Length: 434
Image (cartoon, rainbow, N blue to C red; front, side, top):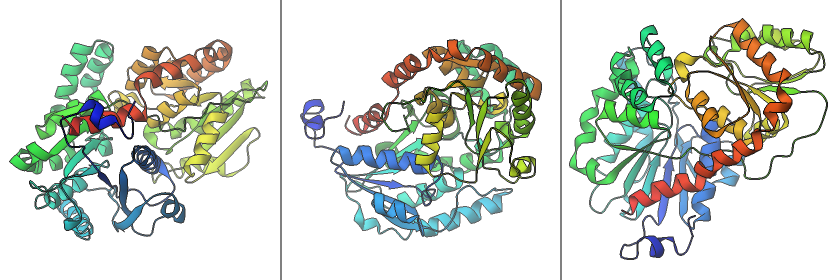
């Protein structure tokens, strides 16, 4: 564990401590919603706990609570998750982000500072790389890029034959790693081409000496290494929940939760029919549903606008403390996600569910399935992405809840032994000091 005062002298007795200040550059932090808010909050708490002065450059006009809780400098006027249908739209987004970054006084930074970038969509990464060129110098800061989303997150669809291979190889690491390395050479994704369009920026001597790359899972490290021709270390996963013990309420009925953005790749189209089916068979079951649609699911989820017995809906964005409280309240966390997107992608909702000691219903042949098996969680898998298969899996989880529940606490502890924020931050800071 990192010791605030003695870490550097114990681990690196002949080196000057680095960093003394940290700057997190996060254009998605502005409102009290989403994983970017929770990640930044946890990073800030951990860095300041270690005695490091920490500043976050965030969205313009942030939520007052963010201003109160964190040391923020609002600069970003542009969202980085706009769709980019063509090269010109991509360049326009880069220009807008570059203009926002130029508001930061580069003379602020010294060689004892660390800059952390976490939202690495291609337009922001390009803007950041070119903004850093005159800043990264012998007397300048170091920069850490943390790849926390897939390079093709916006349009991640595997060819059918590749998905079948991933299914076969999902528990055989050598073959799986080989396929992951090939993944983006087969994938038709404009985002991948945008990354590659400025690959030369990563080959500069300054970059080699001052830029450090990290993936939040092995799959992301492998993918970005291949796309950008860099070396990326894999970080432990983050426990994004608070460290307080989970207090489950004892009751006869089972409570089922569905949380996060209700999108098509997260089974929003199946939700209403499956809930109705489960309530017919298990009339005392209760549901806590986060109805937070996007443009593709808004019409599909209007069925939840009217009251449904035993179903409590939480519409729109939820602040993170409310989301955490709800997740810790439920017994079964329902994740009807598609395998074609999550075969090589982690899920923060899954991690939160494990840390909340939930039984989970998850897709087979995915990162979630491998992780659930490794920690011996209480889980039920479904093999096909259709309404009947997914509802059958939820049915099995309800029928076998008492047995599955016995595994959840031990699984959480097993997960957290290897994956937690302290180890996550240790890996980053130790890398800077070697």
